[in-house]
Length: 374
Ligand SMILES: Nc1ncnc2c1ncn2[C@@H]1O[C@H](COP(=O)(O)OP(=O)(O)OP(=O)(O)O)[C@@H](O)[C@H]1O
Ligand code: SF4
Ligand SMILES: [Mg+2]
Image 1 (cartoon, protein in one colour):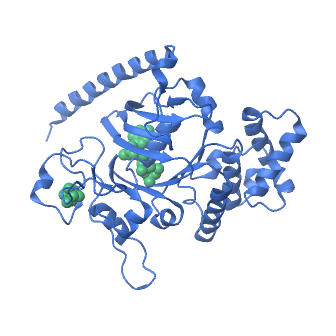
Image 2 (cartoon, protein in one colour):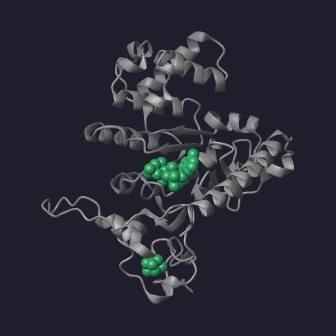
Image 3 (cartoon, helix red, strand yellow):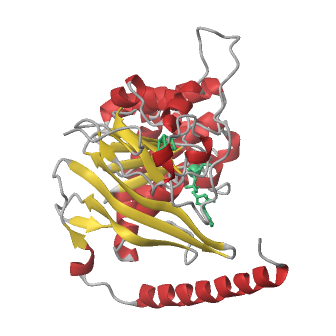
């Protein structure tokens, strides 16, 4: 335990070091980035996005939070990938890194590549792309649906004006009437009845579910290749959640986009995703196809998540909850981050953090209980 004096000295040093890091970051931000620095090559041409050893840190007043600490996964073209894990495990920070919408300079991508296959055939490393290019990519190539629709919609403009604006910014429609018609068509696509009337309404005049439909319409406006949905149904009540999920499932077959679906609801993942990534404390602990993860969960954390789902057969059964808490992203231990909560812990678990190993062509896990497939 540190004395108060020692602690104050430590905090002062953290502040000094952070200021140095912020200064360096802001200096680099002003530099012109040559194409050769951000153009890359996809490892597999079937993929739309390849996240490769991504590290995203937050330099806070009490130390460095390793929010995303060496995450690698790919999103194949046309597929839906579910990213699951408890609160604080780094799901949103992963997606904000892809969009380059981190709170800077506190939040920074410190290493790793985020390769994205653009429509024009080029591969861009989003982690290094200049802001101007990112502004083009957001909306045109990748769009995002956030948890709380009210934060996405502007309360002082009508739904129509906001949709028109997205189209004006990104699509080459010339005539006002064409843009209006496209906005109304989008509202119809997301299941809004009487879309001409809704076009003229303000966000506060709509229910939460309707607002989320509008947000989805906005995300679809420019026909993006990738849609990132961060907890798209969490702020809604259960029946509306089901409607929005139905809508998303329906849209999935109508559009060609890949979807990155972030949620802590395993039921949503089971219904929507082709592939699943399970995150814990900024790292991937298990990933595989949806069948791999649901039929044969391996990591004790994934097994715990499965057990904590409501059970429809035995309705009186008490809901299981994984004991303990997620460790702080500042000062993470050297061993498996799940060790203090794990019921299957063995002696080896005190060794260094277990590597992510392949147990089949599609299924990987980071836990000492398993051996690599030969
Ligand atoms: N602006 C920030 N400053 C400092 N730390 C941050 C910031 N944003 C996120 N973090 C930290 O990064 C870690 C990952 O956060 P993230 O928001 O990605 O979690 P999440 O998995 O999306 O959780 P939830 O399910 O609650 O949305 C957390 O420990 C969080 O405290
Ligand atoms: S490595 Fe050990 S502590 Fe970590 S999840 Fe596996 S069994 Fe549990
Ligand atoms: Mg989140």
